[in-house]
Length: 318
Image (tube, rainbow, N blue to C red; front, side, top):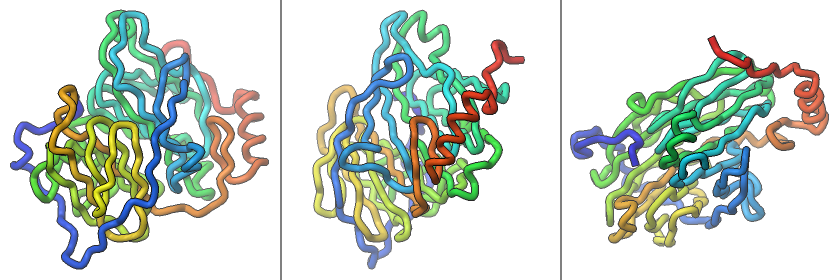
């Protein structure tokens, strides 16, 4: 897993440990991701939205892509499509995706990189595997998170943040047994490089066998843990969790995740996303790639897209 790493975890600064009086969040719900297909037919695992967890305010969707080993000619992507009213956060762990959009922007997102796209008032973009990956095949593993925007900011101009893997905040868990990459927000005293409209925490932890990540968590944020690979337990009651499962935590001011003593041979560490945010608590109406506050705004988004008001991806990029 070539997501950005460190040769010596113990040399990294440590995350703050929870205070002695902190109340560790118990597990309120466990969700097993459903399997669906997107774009040109690539498979994703989606813990939300789902029948058991319609949304996780302020988050709208979480898609787990891979890990998959593509044979030559098999790699697929998502051709030109619109977005309005929210942000897409694409985090690539293995492989690469090429982004193009109707503003003329774009670039390659590869091992450990994150692209934070604020769709805002509207944009058309594509996310496709680069030609070399299609030609030769190879390993691909990534995550896309959709973050809602408050109603007052849904009409903001599109914005991009290209966060290179080496720009992530690397830190160690309080016990030194996990490498934690903070992508956005502040986690236990360490802040990630991502700038957010909505207050959130987004981090990727690689937890050594039998080690624990136990960190303070804002009491006014929700909290979740999604397993990318491996297995372990979550919460003070040690609820078992494995790849493709999401733990939704209840109230409290600390979160804990422990890796199992033995991990699968292919994944020597528990790979887990830690995410949460301050709920927006506003009406949400979603229709495909549009996330707005009213049905009328959805109708307007469809009309605007059909009329070309969100633009078109240039055939070539300067």
